[in-house]
Image (cartoon, rainbow, N blue to C red):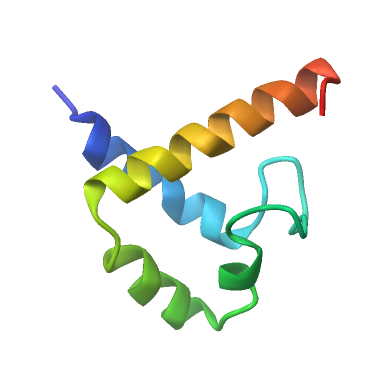
Length: 72
């Protein structure tokens, strides 16, 4: 069984590249991170705790649901 923390770390790698809805929205908590060179983004990600990454993933899943439903 895959732990949520491990899944969060894996899924957040994709979020470092761009928003799932496209681009790099300025209101995203990863906005500044996405401006860094790719190697620095990975270092930043690997420095985060499982709790921090699970929280960030939760934020992104909630944001994504709001955007596809037209709420945001």
